[in-house]
Length: 291
Image 1 (cartoon, one colour):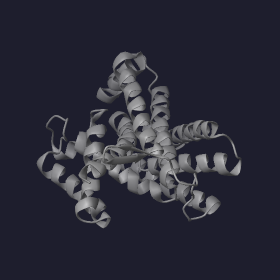
Image 2: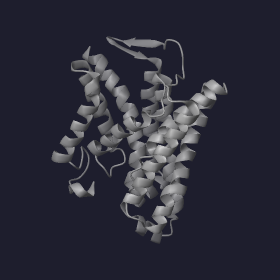
Image 3: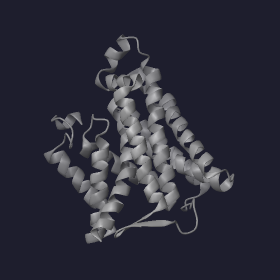
């Protein structure tokens, strides 16, 4: 039985990691706490539902369009919400409040258009596969495989390409990068576009598995933020370690206690790391106020 819950934890951790990588990419570079990322997640899922169930496009084409919409919407938030704050050099509280407001507007707009009830993207019984005592559905296997593929491509992008070097340089010293002739505003747009891809992929995978409702984004965003902090703020790939740790622990809590305790345990983990290891699993030691 424990192997089944560990496997479920790995699948959940894959989704948490994708969202953690996306929001971590934005925060580590722009220092914007992108709360509106929750609405990007929901928008991608509802875009998939619209193209697949309403317009009856093919599954592949619907997924591609949903990811594209998540990417474009994330870029639009950067251009019309965060960029003015960046140009005016406002305090960090202004982009945060603006992000929360954007999340509220987009979430309620989605609820107004599609309704508050959960939308089921796929119907019927999902095909399952048995690996010893572990049973996984086809979509769960796809979720983990998609994470492995996207994470591998992300690491290659960060370590082996000029764009990846620019991202890391931007995270270290954006002012110096600007002085070297790099157009920082264009780089921010590319960063938000890449971050939107992570949310789009994660939202499609979740929607195909359990469906979606307008308010599902915030809960997964909070877990993604905890994953980022647990893994280590400032390190682009660290959210993966936090995501899998939380995914496994959450499912072990379901096994031993109750699903009602999942969120409680998640934030107890956050408190533990903030008190005893604020730099996270992979991070270097720093003051609490720097997180």
